Image 1 (cartoon, helix red, strand yellow):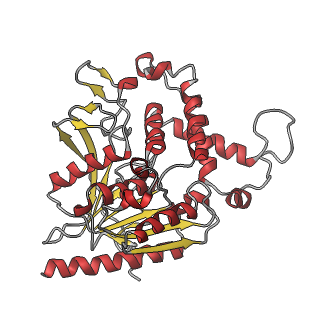
Image 2 (cartoon, helix red, strand yellow):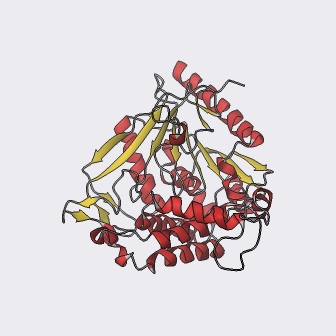
Image 3 (cartoon, one colour):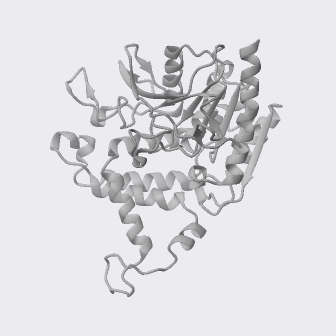
Length: 383
């Protein structure tokens, strides 16, 4: 196993696209900007590119730190970098912040050139497929015709699947982790409760709170608390918090008594300080709408038939939001199309968040799979 080495400090770049982006809804996003970070170097055959798709609250900043501040580490820094499972000494890794997000790409906080005001509530609804089309334009700009792999977890895994179907000739391998072919009714319900917390916050102002100089912090905080509960397993919460009391005794009131309450409030307050409420609405709606089988009368095998890539899927035993059975649905649909599929079901107590954790078995699976991809890239570069 290669030793992990520091990732060179990444340099975010802003890509400006003048051509409008047609959206699944029928709307059109006019000229827009996307934030991009890259790690490693393209080989001579331009065959070693890996696109990493981000989940709900992440961004283009996938790995490494800004300056020497460990608090700025990329959201998948334990997975991507020199000597890590996706080794940037062998791969050229690309992170793209999707349109509609709030980390520098065009989104609700951005100024609409047509009005001179922030987009706010007028920003069009975007889908997973829209993001994939925007990412494809980034690859075109970088001169990359075909990806060695597209990779993502959770909502990022949905984008990886969409890549394999929407641009089959441009994807050699698809790595989809802790994901699903669509959201269950329960998952949509959780998203709706979170959205209502935001929309009913008095400071929301119909999504145009920028003009009022306020932020719907309370609603966004509650939304994050709801989401965070679904990312953790009961075992993980029991192990970390149990029924521990914050002050050692009950206060017989409605402020914080239990450590889990304190933790959730802290996570909610922190999130409301850096994330945009309109973006939260957009991204959870994109989660709700993803359903490639819907256009095929619910037949997932038919929906995935265009895919030509080889696949790695991984799930986690305690993930009840994107359960292993959802990954197995994808595996069965791919096998029905005689696609080459590797599947790993990882024993983990950490729930949905396990895909971001340092789980040795999980990292070994990904490392071994990317070792195979690296060998293919080397053969292609020599050809």
